[in-house]
Length: 143
Image (cartoon, rainbow, N blue to C red; front, top):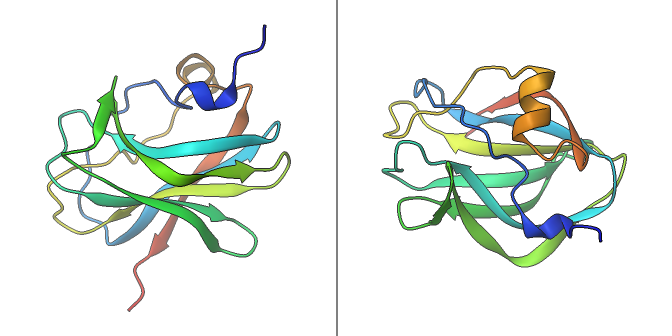
């Protein structure tokens, strides 16, 4: 019996936030190991969220935003993450690089993680068979 990739969150680890001094998009790059659908987007909610922030999926090469969700204090929480469902599932294709990011603002009430995770942490606290974690990314705010 094969588990449906849409049936659980990609991350389940706890990486508490320490920063709130950046204006722009902060996140990470992934490379899918198979085609799969994203049905919701989320962000760390530990401690509980105090304000909403936009979470987005980007196609790396074109820099096109493919889907976004506003995740905040009223969002559903499972484990360490708050999430919002997407209006329609988003198909990520094997071998195509994507970026997942959170819009950050200086002095926002919720702090976000700007740390790194070891391969061991990622394999134990993410669905590593679904996609490879490539590294962190940022995009400064543009007016």
